[in-house]
Length: 115
Length: 113
Figure 1 (cartoon, helix red, strand yellow):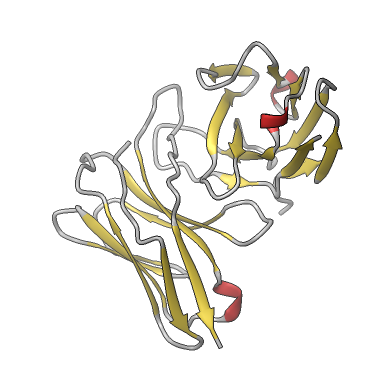
Figure 2 (figure 1 turned 30 degrees about the vertical axis):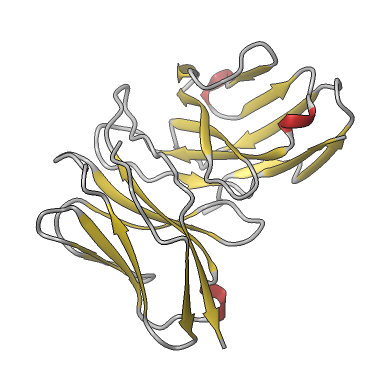
């Protein structure tokens, strides 16, 4: 079974430029998550989707970050414009979903460097 | 979600059992204890989870105390590839069909040859 796929794996941009990250979850997984991980810290949730609906985006900085999950499968996370402090690893995870213990499976992440 | 407390770092000799402790004294009755690990430059990897009973799978064993205030992850025969950051997470149902994971800083396990 294929895992969570993310691309690109690495991205280097200059500040004020836009950037987008793509995630393809595990087939059949209804719930999709985007996390941000700063160096030396654990991942922090940015947004959670149930199918195509964003049900928890309280931690997403909406002035510059946006996300979409059209058709409830793939998802894209965008930053525009990027700032120096956005340098981090952006992780995507997916899970089956449902009102019971629901294991999240993570992709390899995209490492963003903003110069 | 319950706040968890883990040692910052631990060492373990290769081939020996690695016992990683976690305190979660504020865990509620419906919160699961999840363990993930993250090897350098990779995404977090699911290891195991449990509610009340001890659990075992092909990767590890999870021992939860009877009062559920602490747990121990056991890697029975640590190898160099087990060197990673291990996260202990209390996960409660957050509504709308999902459990929330709140990661701390975890324990950096170094397996020594």
